[in-house]
Image (cartoon, rainbow, N blue to C red):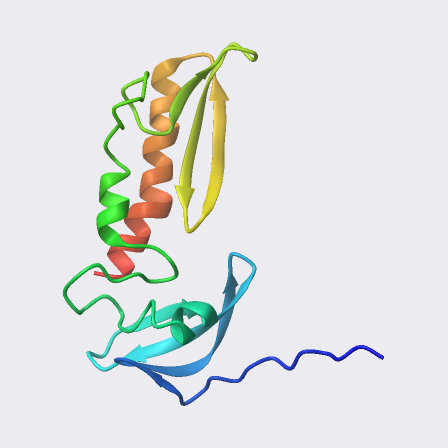
Length: 143
């Protein structure tokens, strides 16, 4: 007979400056918790990041703080094209097999498809919308 795993209840536990308040909606299919930071702000953090010490504040502490596996400096860097980017716009690539420009964005470990476009400028607009929806929203909530 197999053993069922009991779900951890982290309510009331402290991890650095964070105190776990209650379960939150899962993030990337992983259990997450609403936490109160000692600075007064809240953050939603995955169990793994709390227990491994990867997230210990809402982001108010200096240095690269990761919230749900995401770092503000990493998001800012994602707005700049890498050296090997041929379109000049991050997340916009020419898809030869489809004859379209493909727009994508990565956020919290997932690549999100933003559409295929015959027009390069439309693909760029889609990417910019994705940055506002995913990256900018996250940065606003955690800054």
